Length: 160
Length: 137
Image 1: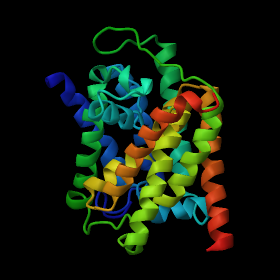
Image 2 (image 1 turned 90 degrees about the vertical axis):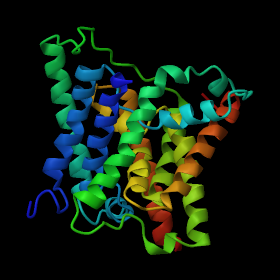
Image 3 (image 1 turned 180 degrees about the horizontal axis):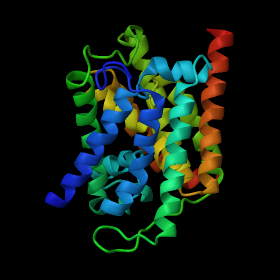
């Protein structure tokens, strides 16, 4: 806790603050925490004539709040890194700033976007919100997230 | 317009906490998946326990939202995508060091390469939209 709030926040501060988002959003806005749905909204806005039912029939106008929320996330990242840190924290390794790195991020990003939409949620919607509201589907989803991440870790350890 | 302002504030709050606890750091995500440190597991665990306790209290006292509405907790559907999609997302989480929230926070924190992660995620969501009628469900 030294140098709070400019140092790294310890888990026992960060965890409860993250968890409190669930009841606070329900009480103050009556909306469920969720972030990966924003990918769907953006695609639906960008491609209004898409043949895909998932985008064409999507009422994104009712979900603008979610895009405002993720805009806040960007601002929050800025505030934390530039105003609440002695030095801007490095969040991605240098080697990702190369052609090979960009391709890795692109491929990984595709997996994140495809996977979270197929699973119906991400770490926020399933792990934080879904588990908090005792939904068994979110437990299966969370275990699958970690199965994927740990499999990737094993592959990286064995072959790279 | 003002109605949307509270969502912006919630986003800022969430983005600050994620960034200051370094949940948005590729390095910390690697440490988590390689079991090099327990911090991220403790963050996720204590977040879920806090969420569960507060939802339990919300229900126990039959609390309503500030506007007096009954609180709606959307039910998430269970299907094969829960497992298959979840697994694919996990692979991507390991590679990019970012789940969806952190992608946005990384962009704000000045990691310009995260724009590529976001571009990939949008492409991935588009691919899901196109392929979903043919995916196992």
